[in-house]
Image (cartoon, rainbow, N blue to C red; front, side, top):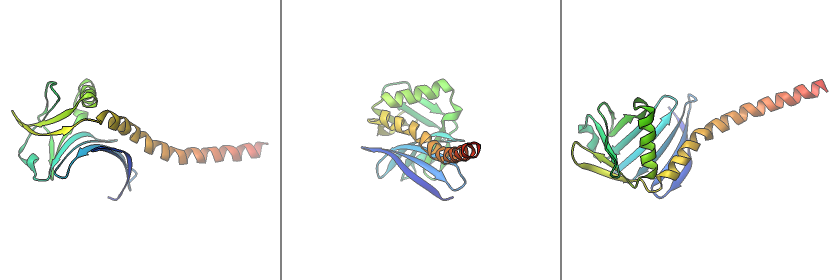
Length: 167
């Protein structure tokens, strides 16, 4: 499926993109990465996921997704999905309170630790994540505004035409 990608925010290692797909679907991605690994938050109408990717397919051996933000208590998803190097935890399956707490920790945090049962697999910098999350929240609005602008322009023109007829 073809897509249009618009960069909404880019600072340091953090990037936020808005995607528009040919089928009309839309998504937002906030990510921090280097050439070998990536941490990403993906949101669309149907999905809200937290995912890690490693070029060496490190994730392939895990049937759980465990992470910790700074010195906070770790979080664990016992049923993540694996797809071609990506290990994905469906945030939609968490309680609303847990999802909110994870976002709060990520916004305020300095390091995101991806963990195996006992040790750190890798860590990702969360410095700048608060602004990236702000941009991520706005990216959903970005496509809503642009798609509604065309609709509203049509409504406005229709109103003008109707007003002209009445006058």
